[in-house]
Image 1: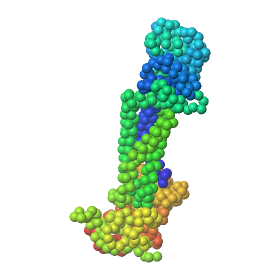
Image 2: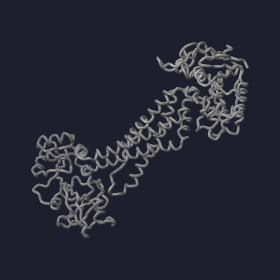
Image 3: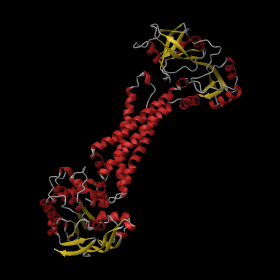
Length: 379
Length: 229
């Protein structure tokens, strides 16, 4: 009977393709938009993610997310270092400045300044050069996107110069950093140099990066710092999630993406449901004949669900393939870097598609189950 | 073997309820014998198709006694009734009701597949029967590639492939021209009528009456007369 079910489904080529298209379209929209959304949210934590060697971040007690900070004082740094259980604590600068290329091209940049002595927190993925170069005066590392903005179409090369706040600085390394939320170049330098490249304020320290002593959990170290200093201390992971939730709660991004996903869900369900129902209606006499011949309701329900599952599986596969193809095709586009199709999104979209086909088949199943087989005797 | 394949005694069938009740069968008495082709004839709306549906177990009767192949169908629970139909009844429908996406052989094999047969074996058996019915060249054609007469022959094959003991036919010639109707009835009589099987045909096509062994006349929800042909 599975064979009959399959033949009935594929026999009406137009509806069969229409059903697959509806599911594939809904799958593509849902998986693509959720991927972009997750990628965007992931971008909000890119500067946190790239600091891999400091598990605890300390900041002003009112800080809500990584992009809005109130400067700490040197005294704060010393107090953190004095907390029982802290192995080391170093300053981190995160701010914005403006850089200018020799040809006059300029742009705002995200500037990260790391502890002069240890360079704790520098991103680990180097494309060219070494972090040791940052120990040289007036030298910085830039991310690839920044390099390609200031020197478009030119091969990666160290030693080129940029102007920052009337300082000529040399590119000593090129980094493959995570894409930031705002699509600005990210520059890395030592803490002492970073504060020279931005406008003068009395205090410049954005964060203190901390590592606890062996045997202490990061959460415990963070708790002790908060307790001893009154500053906010949190683990790297928790700070990342705080930042993501800040953007979710305080921007229209999730609503915007949510509406698109909801539309995909509704349109997919309605179009698939309507097409599937029409398909069932047109086959009603055939289903009636099968019931008269002695095919049970359960078997017929199984046939309809099998048809729905086949359509769902093919449509889902096509939709996911389209999404994967999109991200594969755009993976080298710097503006779209970091966006990708996560397995969790594939699973979630699969669940949504399952819901679509179940909803789409419920009406059809009901129509066939209540169908009197005697209908086949009515000409 | 009991000589009567079907025994109807005071069979009632009502539709609706209360003031809106419509009494379609008003106490039908009818015997259908094994080894015979019995025609159920009468004017439109007299209850022929309803009686056929009740006998085939597609509609529940509202009253009276009905034994089909020695079984009181009304006493069978739903699943058993479906199984009873699958094992013992063959159906021929007015509009053929072949599955358009299946070949002639696959259509004819549907009752066997419904009974759990392997598809290849079922189709092979259906092909033997289709060859007997003169469709040896058209077994792999789909219904829309067949003439009306050929489609009805496929429907006959579907009704007979699982060797049922009762074959019920609803207006088997109404969608066919006169000549084709005669041919398919000759064929039906040749292959369907056997000593251990009864064939019940609902028709209002008087041109095919000569093929009947017995003709039951219905009028206004009652069998008014049974003639031996």
